[in-house]
Length: 145
Image 1: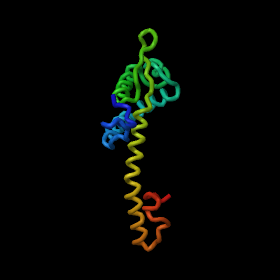
Image 2: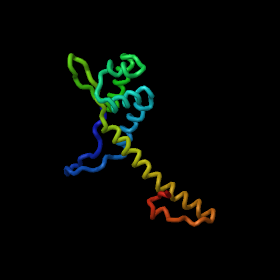
Image 3: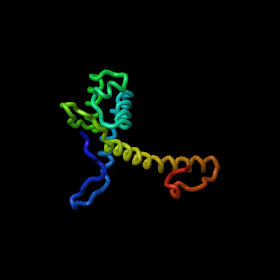
Image 4: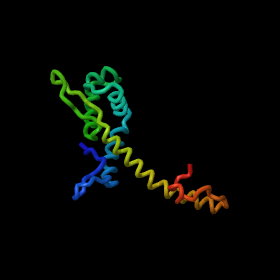
């Protein structure tokens, strides 16, 4: 299961943002898990209704309990759900938000990297076309909104 990556401790004990590669590894697991529409439906159901057993989910979704259990295992492997003991030995699955937050951090970092490069390209294209850029990319952080 992926760790809850939001900050990482350094040798001095201070906490710093994780390395982009760490974000990418967790984000990849999240994106692969959510690439399946059934798993997305399970995640949406857990987000709306809270923790549930595979049987509970099978009653609410058009899929068998056995298939739901397999999808939950994949979601657990990606760290998106956690299994917790329930009453009468029934396992309930609870949604975990940390991996989603990591995926969001990864996308934010990726967008930040692209914003500057794309802003510079737009400025160059505007100059080559003879159009004055309203604000240079370095003043807007590469964004042209």
